[in-house]
Image 1: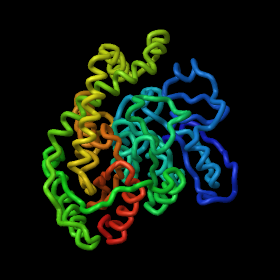
Image 2 (image 1 turned 30 degrees about the vertical axis):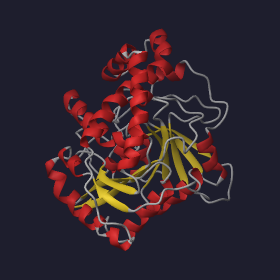
Image 3 (image 1 turned 135 degrees about the horizontal axis):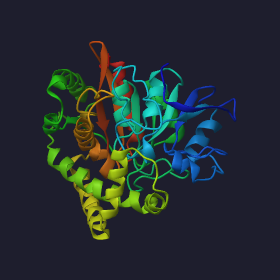
Length: 392
């Protein structure tokens, strides 16, 4: 029997009218649902926490617009992985790459959408946890600008970087959900071009280069149709190397601050690799953390200048997903590459959308990243790209 990533089926609908009337969704098991314990993908976390007293605001906003909540979806334990493997549950099915991981930590949300259990799904994204599983499962995934959607009623991982994102097999539906959760851009930046971070191609697996560059060629031709300036060369790889290192310091410190006491008191039954990575967070000093935040503020200013008025085109993931039986070392190297590719939006709080495109019998993915606050513009650009048959 195929496991579609849904760990608890529900039937919650509070309104029968609104923008999302009768559309179905699931919510990652990091988001509060009134009356239920938010389990965080770990039985000891669920055992030691009380039921939620309210729905998290993002979920409530969807219910208020007529959406129908069908279930809780699987997450990697406390969202502390990009693999989509949780030792306490079966492996969620990836219909795009059968026998391969879905990616995480919003693994269940991606699987539920890709397997047609629901119309759309909520996930969280700190280091790529919506973008990576969306890319692997061949669906659309949106990480919004930081603080664009309230994080109230969620289990944190790294509060400086956490976001609530959303996924769907339909870009039109992704726009509908975005219109509810994001509202309209305020003081949206004026966009002037779409550019490729050429040096990031070194991260991409060689077997994906050709199809990725074919899509870039088609997208770059849109500059003239938008009245944009011609593409400029952007060097980003050295920034990403720095971002991913600083991100790991800051996210790790915040994760330990949020959950370290519980971790030490409970000694939870966890995946050995996640437990080891989580335990190592205790060693990150306050000085390292504050230094990372200082450099983050400097980096945001630098990136704002570098990307001023620019939508950035880049890979979402480095290659096809590893097998569900991949070794720990293969998973580690894959995680590192994907964190690197996604570190720009993660570290600087920028919106990013992962777009699936057909390649032979599978769906690969590329991403568009925009300046902070350009969320709705990013969705509009994605729709324009789809209308030009570039994703076919």
